[in-house]
Image (cartoon, rainbow, N blue to C red; front, side):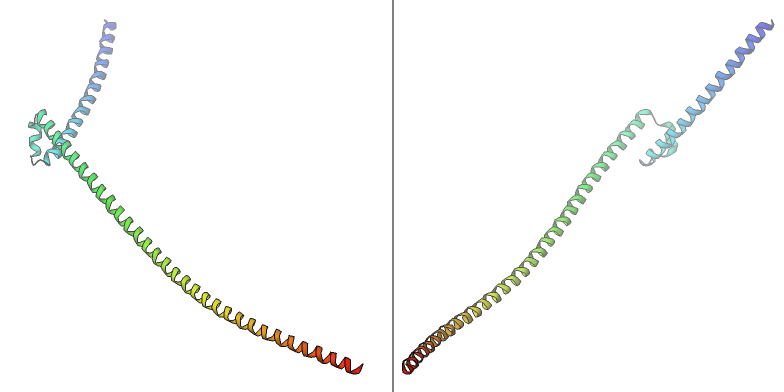
Length: 168
């Protein structure tokens, strides 16, 4: 009898442990149910239904609401993509405008540099003309001096020759 009593006692303890496990699972499932009720309540609240009706909703109603929610999310995602595209186009437009402004600024600067170089070239050309005129004048003066030197040399030679002939 003692043996049967200890066997019954062990069975009772294992049944108690199983009951504790089942109770924990039941609590967990009830928590999940409450969580899902809150989620559905929030989703249904967006569709203007009372949270009290959540308990009365069928699975089909919940699936319809979830499908509507998915469609709404898809449409919002599409709008986000459209807005991103518009923003990118706007940024590209701003970037293009900024590049164009830089190019125009650079072109203006190049035109200024070009004008400065043209002025420098004109001044240099004028200086070259003046220098050519001076060279021509100096060449003329040089020719006159050469002719004078030649004339003086001839006179000197002639006078020298005459003096040599007179002294001899």
